[in-house]
Image (cartoon, rainbow, N blue to C red; front, side, top):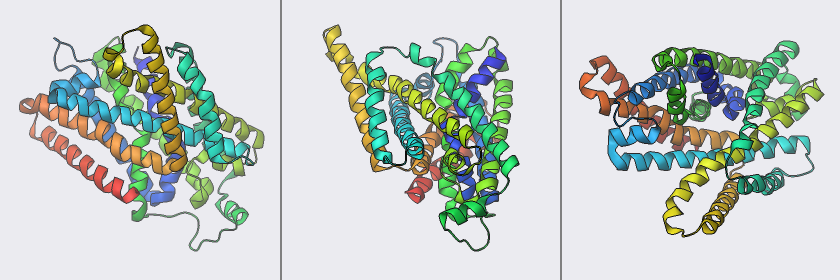
Length: 393
């Protein structure tokens, strides 16, 4: 239905990236953060609508997925390149989830290092990832993510209203002194990191085709996208503004860490921290399934028995988990990883690709304004991806 589709899209867009939005304002200031959020929300709203039009470009053979769009627009080579980017994004998300879990567990048990927390979680996550052949049972855990998103929005906004601006108190607690206050108006030097974090928050366009195909009335897709993005951008702004107002430049790159450490509602914030750990853990296993499945499909023709297939599946998941753990330990920065994934993957999948495919598939039928808009998205996406990645690193 219309509401189910809107709920599913909102649930995808408002994931772990929501935690880093107050840090966007810390990086770019009030004005820079607000502009980044609004402009990128507008761009990804437009490209989501373009994806719906591309899925409806022909009836036979039907276009039902991102790879189908890539193949129809750019052939097998384009499909291959897009698939590589999508799988890289999935792998990067697993790394980000490990970092999130490590940071939150360290907040709960500070006597154990972040890296050791990540190692323990990786060992525990290997069992359900390898044993379960389908994610059906684990899909119930995804409901935790929905509840966690609502809890984060409510907690941040409610805490900022009840406790107000405590940035100076937090700074004194940490022994930090800053001239000119604890809130910045505009910081151009932090725009690259801020934009990457916002981009990661609005990633998820690869799931849009499945939402489109599940709708009873696909003709309502554009209205559904408009409603969903209005709600999502509103929630993102609420979390970003409330979190930055409350903690200022003392806010952590995951606002839940700041809440757990400084809020007076200790029990509630500790429960929220455990909720974030549970959410990230479920997402590690759920995200590993499509990643491992893609690699399994590549090696499947070379396997002669079901026993070899099962062994290969377990080995692939084990290797991917270990590799993700190594990356997480080597780059244990939530904001840096999210920003890099946002710049490299989200810019490619959610901005450049939909606009380029729209030009390729509908070029002669598009108005001059539509062509200019699509070319603008492609050009800006490329510049942001290259310049932003270099600046972030």
